[in-house]
Length: 384
Image (cartoon, rainbow, N blue to C red; front, top):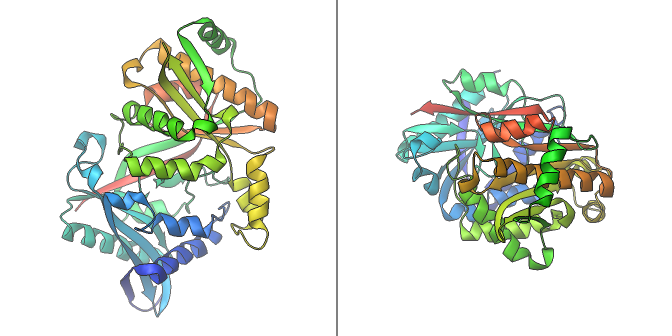
């Protein structure tokens, strides 16, 4: 390891391409990593295309030694996060770093110091990360579960990154977990009785999402989400633009039979979204759409036979939290989704999360249905 480290800001189309391609180079060397679509990665850091930048500002950095790139990092500020109560993790003065990759510990420390310097100049008093780049995209650094590939929309990082971040003065602010669920295994008798009781309750209706009314369904889901998660650590509300954007991006992955809305007394009260694991096909195409990757991806999206299934988002209205009814609605949706995933697509593996480590309600639901922790992510913090 020779030569001084230089860190330069990058911007514009060429700079963003350099930043993404450097991250892809690092990812290729990480065991069990899955190559993602380059076009999607570019879109997420493009202020003209990602509505996250409607309430956020960011700076991308690339580190070099002897003229060769050796790492990258983003420093960013979410204006909506600054408005939240500090006890929910964000709040006034909270900046973030993300898209963290480094060749060695010296480069890691230099990159973190540069991100901290930029945030300090912008008036921030503490830093959280890695969060790449919205908290709804890829929050946290993988700290457990390196021995298997991630599912759709989950990050995957080398195990040694944790030590480099902690040696730069960071401590764990929050742990996020995913739970693996054997899809074809029946639920315990108690859960089956709870589900059956809900099915007899005339106040409850659990239905599939209606893709013919997709815009309406997206608004329902995100309205419940913004209510259900509003007291959670790290919560930042979706804006109208982000709602429309998410609906458009996710629609190709939506199969009605595994995405559900629960109604109570005729009003939407809970939801559960499930995505087939597109990483199954990206692994085979190398994350490339050309020359024939797009055709393979299209065929797979229509009929994801054998795919793993991930539940990235679910929520029950806050007024029902800590009630028997909240658990019943969750069990009813999980039960139907599990059954359909197994029967229609022959799925064997499901994943729920991420789940905050102190979310007692969701942890209890996951453990009751026999799910076990298979991955853990840490969000770190440091005063500036």
